Length: 265
Image (cartoon, rainbow, N blue to C red; front, side):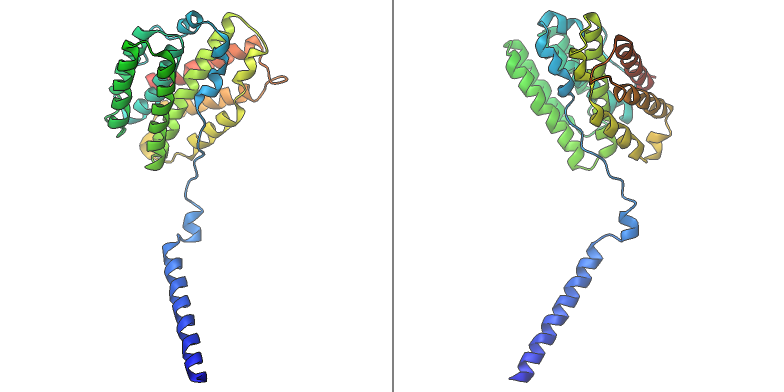
């Protein structure tokens, strides 16, 4: 009886030992895992668009850029452009500008081939066309939210963190730029509170610095954009009682314009 117990204990010990070794093999080496870059998930740029609820649709529509943002076909620029145009699409939906929304949607669908997002963006384009024709503005706004999240989730789940970061950068830069422009038309310090997205811009800078892919970080566009992003980050972090002065708002516009120009080249 004692012999059986001893044998059983030895077998259990052996199995546990093998199991631990197998788990050890499946885990990354501590020295290697410490080098794995960590990207922060980023919130929706619609947080800064909350101020739009206080404006009339004609004023919101006036903030849509007269010309569509276009740049050469290249992966990094496509990611930035897709994020930027998504911010413009939300603006067009809230401003109930069907013509602009159609143009923006068509341009967005031209950017998917290099990003592996054809099904997500094309589905969005089909849905937008149907809702625009029916003038379903509230449904349009909700649909844009859903499609935007599906695109962001696809890049995150496939661990395409570089393009995820750059696409979100495009969205946040354009949203901050357009809201700052609107605030500039009729300055109200209390409304400027919405620009105080410190956590997001701090994470954007951190994520951009976490990108290590040579063909991205060696581009002058990327370097210039990061430099300007840090300048915008500094302005956003230098609020007074959570509000921003007209001079700071103008600096945010100039800084975000410079980031857009960097990827436009």
